[in-house]
Image 1 (cartoon, one colour):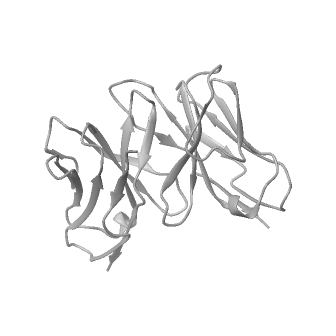
Image 2: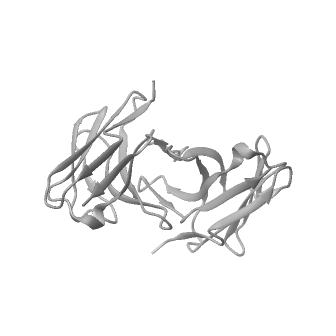
Image 3: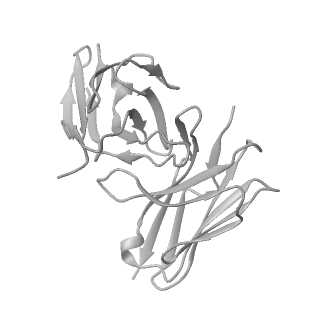
Length: 112
Length: 114
């Protein structure tokens, strides 16, 4: 079956540095991905999405890169701040089936 | 007020007890979901519903049941709770549009089964 997974369960960075969180997926037909951020004690929240007709999409301080050749996507956070400390999930929303498949999450810790 | 509200937020119960987790939403979405989150395992889908008359099993439905009482309400029941159902449970909604698969989550219900 299809799956999405993250490379590292934890990541620690210094405040002000850039963070890169990686995700791999198995289904070459996957065409849509979402990154969620889950802060402590809260539910996951949408950060940014990307479709397979793009290889890069930028938001405010975040960039998602999609490499369809190796079935890999990454979330880059520029100038990481303490408020970025959270668990980050990549997800594949299969809008036809109406179900999302989530990776296991990467816990980002930002050191002051 | 939150768009997706879960009650209770925390519950401690004993093995064999029946537990109901409730979810209500004000987003007007047709699609509602129940996910379970365990440390290191991400979110796993328990049940989902595309409208009031539609109920579908997710990947880990055994030991759970659901009821979609109205468009805005979707409850999850554990008929006879067991310790390995100790987890953080999330309700979520989505538009159901082909243009977006974004899920809107509640703040979670932490369940402990002793």
